[in-house]
Image (cartoon, rainbow, N blue to C red; front, side, top):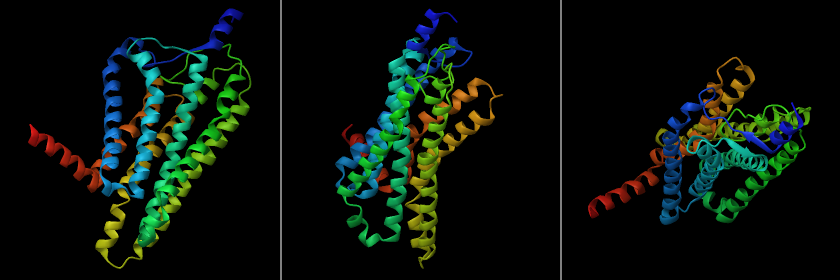
Length: 315
């Protein structure tokens, strides 16, 4: 490839909408717009209800607020490039803009995993020591946990932009997704990416993998505690408080595992399948988490119903 092409490719990437079917991109504009609108409305409603209703000023709902903010942040990280491709048919993204988006997507992904671990700890404390629950998880402690989760994410993702910037790009500059990911950009480099691959693997193992083990261990302890409760009704009540969190964990980790397995073993599959799974991993949890917590959490459900009834009575 000539030097001018190499120079251009190094300073920009071409994002992909629907692989092999660029003419179908406009068909996805409104469904994606609907998903982003639902994400903002759903998480915004959760945040507003928790802020207004003083009865929800408890540790569980503070953690839920952090999860909602993280979901909004993750959605907003992918929004610019999604709009660019599907609404304005402008797939070209500057190199530095791509790296910036990459940083935020991976950071919010690690933050979300950390928040889910924090919520597992919250459920463990609530069931194991309900009398001291509020005194153990004070707003100050929750704030420090939130800061620690964000700090960890920034620290582990911070080297990624520099690892990408050091690579020469002289092959194709066409990415396989509608947004910038480290593993996607890395494969376009025309030099060894061993350091990038090794660092990416270490980060995944010691953040997402380690978090998954902590969550699993937390639920083993929760189950052990619940089985020690004499009353069957109390056992069911205790487990019911965990259902929303279990759903949130599954919404995050099942698509993540699916993406990983397809990336590792599904190279023969259509690029559309890879794109669909990647989009599911990034877009589905922020949309469905508010729905899960609204349906499974009676206090939030009651408050939403109350707001709608009041508006109906006004009409």
